[in-house]
Length: 167
Image 1 (cartoon, rainbow, N blue to C red):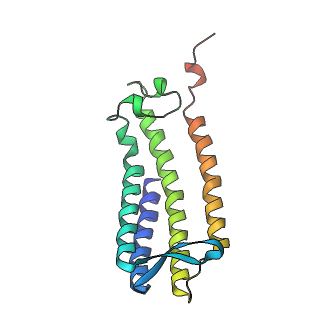
Image 2: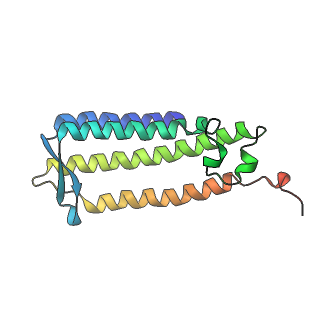
Image 3: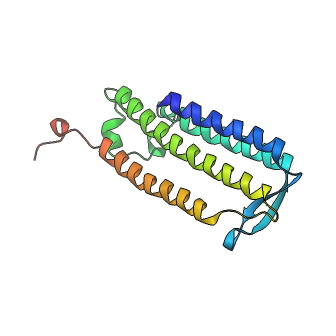
């Protein structure tokens, strides 16, 4: 999973670099109803913001499993954290959390890649217009995956049956 996350993150950076060379100096960065451009930025500002945002999100997702050993438990929101944050379970917790966060990161950066492609296509059109249908398909797929992922988090962090307190 880690390698796939790095690959989709790198693909986004390549798309930003390629887009930078292809885009006009003034780019549409926000689109309203019907895909019509209603927000603008300079190409350089858009490129810097996209790279900074991608890098920040990548670091959050990539390093999240390491933070559970540093961040106080009261600040962590994890199902059954009293069980999963014990020293005996910490290594399993980090492994589960790494897999979950990296899978979510892959989905997130795939969404960002789709949005980047759609935004590039929109800015190459005259006048700039986002393909709203494709955007909504990508967003819906991501939202459905997010629901699935949330269920997976709850499922993966259940207390194992052999460890549950007996009534």
